Length: 192
Image (cartoon, rainbow, N blue to C red):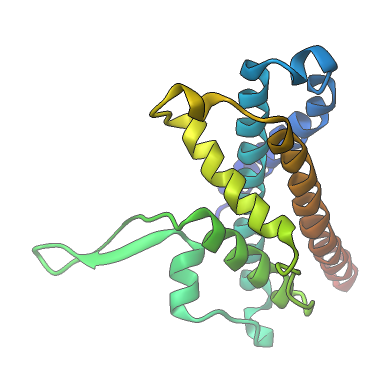
């Protein structure tokens, strides 16, 4: 991982944190009852989640780079998934890669599970209905991004409430793991 890549990843994360802070202003009564703003809100929430997942994968790579000599490793299959690549041979027998993205629910679980296990934590709780609701809302996000009918564009009151609730769940779950990562960085800094 190059310094330039790491700096770009951190700029992306900082931009997303700024967007997250601005979401508060977005949730005014006049906007929350407007279908246009409801669609924007859902797309923005999922953009933030997807960015957090990308940055988390980059943080995992950093930890792997530093801690691999101490025995923290992933299988080659996990590394391929972590890098979101498909590996194949071209007609000349040379190894090539291309981007290959996983389904949202699988990618979310893989990323959070890998992040937490690398830090010696238990796996996140996917058992309550918040995770299932998040997956259902990811489908709704796809509906409003690629609508096939007008009805797919209409966001119900309950979907807005659910979006806020599952976004809170994601941010709390990710935040708990991230605190442990920050602790690891602090301990790492103390070693030098």
